[in-house]
Image (cartoon, rainbow, N blue to C red):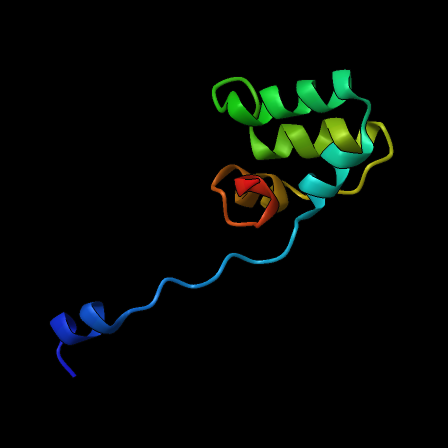
Length: 80
């Protein structure tokens, strides 16, 4: 198959399930959920690793990969 045919026949994969970050956002009080959402939007100030560390300091388990996937909109909840 040629590359042109591969691209022409490609179907966009469906987004995955609701991620850990989405679940945490839904559990938090509004003020904290808004702060986390703002941190996710501020890539200059907050890396995925820093978000992971801050969440862990408060007892939440969410990896930097989860934060980065959420940022890229690769989970169903990010599009909601």
